[in-house]
Image 1 (tube, rainbow, N blue to C red):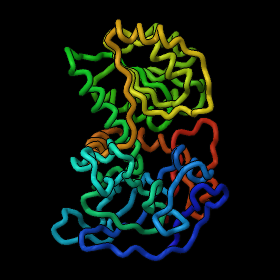
Image 2 (cartoon, rainbow, N blue to C red; image 1 turned 120 degrees about the horizontal axis):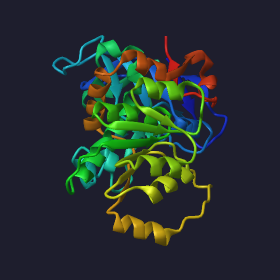
Image 3 (tube, rainbow, N blue to C red; image 1 turned 135 degrees about the vertical axis):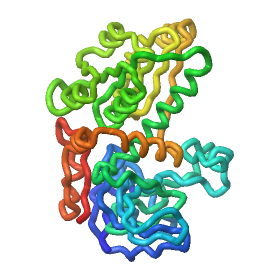
Length: 349
């Protein structure tokens, strides 16, 4: 079968190659690919900045945002041929650490976890793939192609779970949330905020394109300009940072109000330097009982929660998050960055 592979840490190695068909074990599903999502981390792998091949192998099958249809399922597994499914990304380390032993490899304590399409495990950008039944999540069949949004939705489902757990350190009744960044994570974080009945606001740098309309159609409010001005005007109870810009992160952190929570889901490039008065920032956070947390990846619980959230969402709105669909034979186009895109998807057919 055909699969999209790279030699990790070698720029220009992306290729559509022939690999052996998957041979599912007795507890595995055999799945036919429908689509894989493309994100910034995938582009880092393609550009040679990240990625680890399986032990003893040169090439890695990429793709961690999966969507497929079950072709073969073990008897009594709860899955059936034709089911729409997504595979988990992060797997526990072999020791395992305390977090991995409790089913939370996304919180691995020793860094020996593996990740499909990223770290020592083949991903899902192949015409077929196999996955353990306990590492697969069935989707509402009506979601169709938009089911490829489940993995990023699971990451923000985890973010919201952690926000709510931290909020319960005392009385917690948030009313307003500001999401910074109008990419897939930001849009899906805003969606989950709306589903929680919050007054949702989204900040991004662009003033045109699909993002302002997507936010408006969600029932939220779109903002551009200076993050400090937006923060001062809104005084949000919660900030979900999903753009990874250093000036947005520091602007939100320095202006969060009393008992505010800032949750970081966007990764800031390490090469960007800005000046921050750390002493004043520390003083303000202490005096305001403010909290900043970072979160990345997700586990089965978050995938399941996200599947429920997508199942009750407007299907047309979800479909509009997919800005571009690229067929497998034009795979290189999927990893080009273009202005005003939200989500790019590589399709199999």
